Image 1: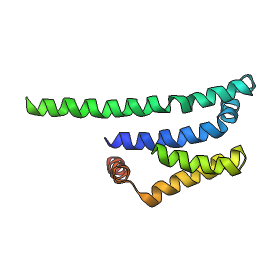
Image 2 (image 1 turned 180 degrees about the horizontal axis):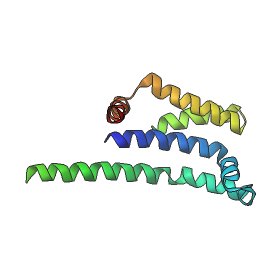
Image 3 (image 1 turned 30 degrees about the horizontal axis):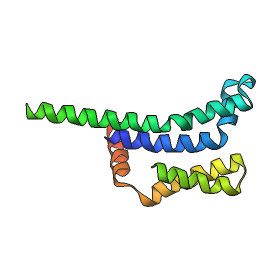
Length: 74
Length: 53
């Protein structure tokens, strides 16, 4: 549960930064081949995948808590 | 969290160019988390610090 909160905070920050300067970050990290529209699209991919990341964290947290509560019950 | 991010990064992007907006958004986002201190996040941070020590 604790990791979920920290993960969500990081996902929010990363999504915001990549939404605004994702193209430039991709150009710096991956080189000139990923400059321009390609880098921008790649950077925006982080933003588009943010809901999936949130859902994944939520699933990980709830499935673990469900399995631990069922283990306690049996 | 997503509402924090949307507001913190969205508002500066309306008035500033890309890089200053990203920097301002990051500062606003972290500042809003520090000021509002969501309980779950504070508990998680304390837990991680306790694990580290």
